[in-house]
Length: 208
Ligand code: CO
Image (cartoon, rainbow, N blue to C red):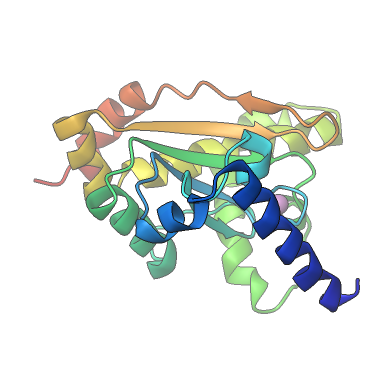
């Protein structure tokens, strides 16, 4: 890719936006009030706004390898805090994608150096759901299921935070687990029953 082409693209994009709405950038510069916090994978194919038909100002986005919301990752925890407490988003979405290289790597025993502790969080998801996963004969189906279970576990990590627990109690924030299917372009709602999960995990993770 020719990097200079990006600046040409940018000029065209500015013109397109101004043609649609002459005050587009004045509004954009005025501030943000997004309804959604989106935690997705850094994979170049799994973009955030574009697949949802949304644009600048609509979504507070955080992406990392395999859409992780690990408990001790200060970056993701900071993002959740800022989006939930200060921006007061109405929805938190964890979106994984089939064909996720991070999840694939966690299913293999290869030593990947600095990525080992990172991927261990995904291996933990496998361990927690070992019986279900090992019962799936087809390795591709098992891989897909781990991707879904990882989304579910990251939703649980989101629900474990005091910020989200309080926002649920005070204003009914919702948490969603989705998977993006690269092969069809479809967004699939895993229909995670976050209210029941929250009820169950409160026994252990409750914070006053
Ligand atoms: Co991925």
